[in-house]
Image (cartoon, rainbow, N blue to C red; front, side, top):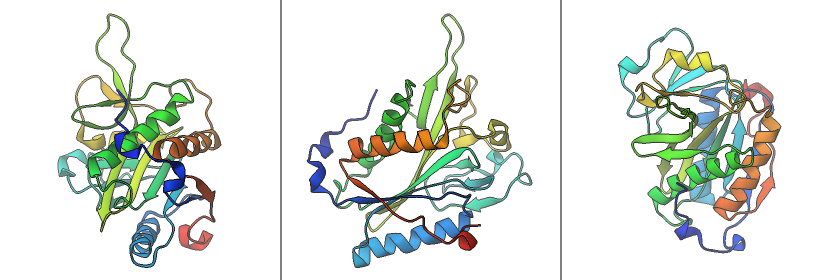
Amino acid sequence: MKPSLHLYMRRMTDFPPVEWAVSPAPVDYEAALAFMQRRVQAIRETGAPELVWLLEHPPLYTAGTSARAEDLKDAGRFPVYEAGRGGQYTYHGPGQRVAYVMLDVGQRGRDVRDFVARLEAWIIEALDQFNVKGEIRDGRVGVWVDRTQPGGPLREDKIAAIGLRLKRWVSFHGISLNVEPDLSHFTGITPCGISEDGLGVTSLVDLGLPVTMDDADDALKKAFRKVFLSEVVDAPAPLSEAQAS
């Protein structure tokens, strides 16, 4: 089921262009978090442009505000960071496309539920370009792929995660889409606190699709324009190479 888009029945010209930046090398998590906080403040206080920032991180785990200690199963495996976003534990690492979304939600409907639904719709629309049916599930955050075989037990795998925070109606953090990460890295946590039988984690490449990061980026850009009714303009990647590493 695709989320409703009823609050966005407007023209693309109703919203200013959104800057779209892609970092070519893995970005340090704390440096990224500090940059997002500065950009959110600038959007709210000085009218800086909204920004979608695509990047990868080195292998790490992040803890959301609802994270439970028992869901960190291997604390020494990778660095662990307090993210300050909603949600529980998640993994970031090479082969996973993270999209940090710094948008003025106050100008885009002022409706948090609808904004989260739009993030879900964005992922679903991008996956559709690879003929992958992404779905949302009540009680399970993120986007899922149903891999249940006819007559077999339930098998649904998570392909994308969502974690969000708003400050004075400007969003930061965002989404992560599994393109070709090392899926074994997810075993150090209970991803998003979900441990039921038949539920796992997948990626586009794990589904048998030879998708590159560039392919995923193109799909995300096209889907963003459609779902958020916003033109995008390419912008330099935030942070210098020294700051990012």
